[in-house]
Image 1 (spheres, rainbow, N blue to C red):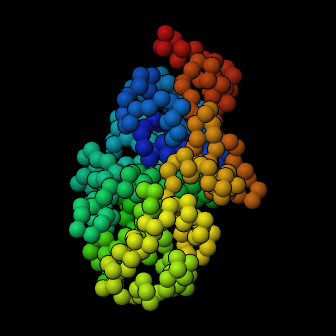
Image 2 (image 1 turned 30 degrees about the vertical axis):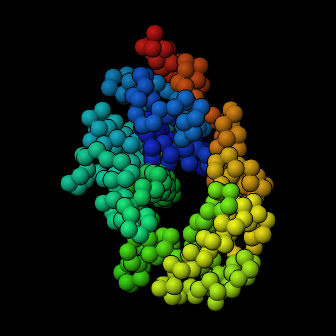
Image 3 (image 1 turned 120 degrees about the horizontal axis):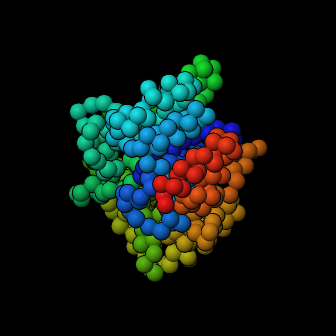
Length: 378
């Protein structure tokens, strides 16, 4: 995405994640932040706020006339804008789609919300858990007989939110190359989370998805679950295909007949108890030595530090260290275009603002705006 310029109006969660993804892949993203920290989200030192990596940063008061005009000057030269406010907020700031399209008809205007730009809940506050609950997704996650289990905020914020916003922005940028016209991308977490669950809705419609925790992919099946080892650590197995299941049974010194058939749900509970007893006889490392790399579909359950040291992930460079912080590397991979190593998150500063504005607006305009920003900060 080298050569693509994106203005990001600072927010939390999925919108910064979408901006990070696009910046990781080479887009130039300038983040317009508040002059005073808003204390939104989970507070942490800046270097650990990894969603803000790979950005140029400006501290701008969007409620001021000067702040609005600066953003519109940036929009003049931008390919896309990303914002994650409630519906109507940017319009009230004078930075809504109409105002931006009046300055740049080719602009892609990416909007990230939980509920979408319209609908009965559009103005309601919410978080990941709310959005995946109302779409039916949360009801499928968890153990049988237990309450639905919040899956961190991976399914809503980042899967159904940020990823879909990034995809929508890229799709709209491609369309704009042919039409010469920009458009609004209305990315709602409820829409994205439902889309992520398309396959599950198909299984449900076919009558193949039962009560939570009783299905193949939700921990109901003995051949798709986690198991505790003798040292208290965990492993997981996922041999869904019969040939892989047979290989697992063979490698652990048993057989399909002894453990139990895959296609008989009535036998799953007994099979799970047998596997629990077997896996509890050795340490996690001992099971790794026996099973890892085989067709048994086996993996150790690693914590973050262990994952960064795993030989496969080390060879691929799945994790990198930036400014002393271990973090995932940009993804996916390309045969010709290699993303640069991530830059750590940066505080807005006079020097940084001048450099960012110079890249976007040229020397004279950059110095004029930088002086204004520095004057307000003083």
